[in-house]
Length: 292
Image 1 (cartoon, helix red, strand yellow):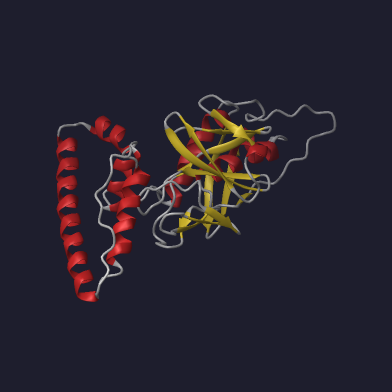
Image 2 (cartoon, helix red, strand yellow):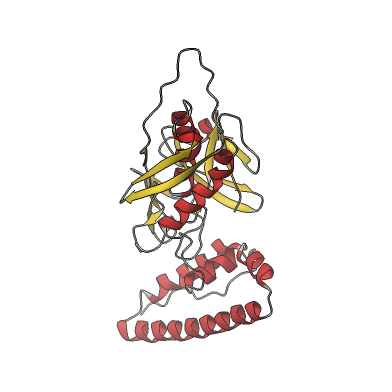
């Protein structure tokens, strides 16, 4: 029976890739053993993981009781901490319910609408990819209502809800008279709170681009003129995804082959999980994000 080369972990830099690489190396060695030995190793692994999960659960509970939420939130930004907590399912799936994200999107555009004595209402959600909204107040019959929908409401909804591809206004469109000046609350270059990441041409069409901004690691996916942004972290062990392969909009993690549909962030390997989205918008050829 071949047991492989069980040499100890070296003094290589402690990175997520290094640690997970060692796990993978030992998994490959154990795969060569007979079934009885594999069962023993599997049960030992489960016992150790159960111990770690219980310890981490108690640590998180203690931090919350001590009102150390800020410290916990800061710790989770570390990719190794994040990956381990995700592995033990101690971090909730990052994708909130669709209706909650839709309401967050509408709350973001409301200040601009209210500055013109208008507002917006969510009328209906038609799964899997359509929502209907209604502009109210002065925005409901303004000649700029179509511009307001495209530049403000529709784009913001798609930033928060990548799975929504159709945003329908139930208002009757108003055609402006010839020569009439049209002003939308979103016609100005509203970039406050947004950070420039790159340009459209830097993202391969049909592919992904890995970036780091303000200590956050992201991937951007481009399909034609559309851009989606996600945290650069696989749901399995938090491994980076930017070196994975993309075929027909499906990203495959280079480490353990978890797959994701990049237009929605849905994990195809474990369907109840999603990639963590980041709000993305275009300003000309520039691609911007709001760090969350």
